[in-house]
Image 1 (tube, helix red, strand yellow):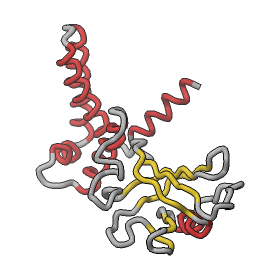
Image 2 (cartoon, rainbow, N blue to C red):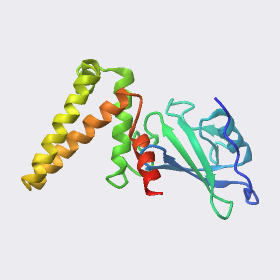
Image 3 (cartoon, rainbow, N blue to C red):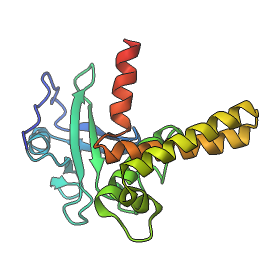
Image 4 (cartoon, rainbow, N blue to C red):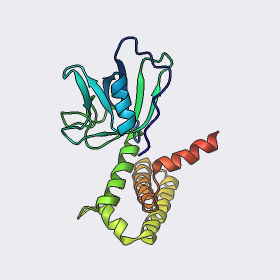
Length: 202
């Protein structure tokens, strides 16, 4: 893995600076820790978020005992040079209490759940747990998944014409889910769709 670049112009005058960790897929704020220059260097070199633990008085890689690592995806510094923002993909819960974040189970906007769902679909693709509906879809093949997207698209359109809000929401949820499955089958995800949409806006 190629090491990440350390941002320039960091103000280390206070020794430690706060480091906010955000889920790279859902946008959820996972936790807040503190870094010194060595912790940041270790994070960038290893690709696993590493803090300076004020209680342990040493470098501490999140997940070093639990296995719940935070895999770094990008890193940025704020305008004053004294706060870091790290985008990471969590392996398991971010909090030692077992919750998704250190601020509770899901303290974010509803739209951020789509990123969580996309990651779950990706996990199903790789792990194929027995008894999972998503597993059955993957094993049925691309044609069946494409057929399901077509069926759900028609049902969504019919619900819109019938002007039934509850049915429209239910069918839309089915459509989005099956589309995520089809995208993952082709090696794609929700982030790839978002990139296309963002480029169109520009």
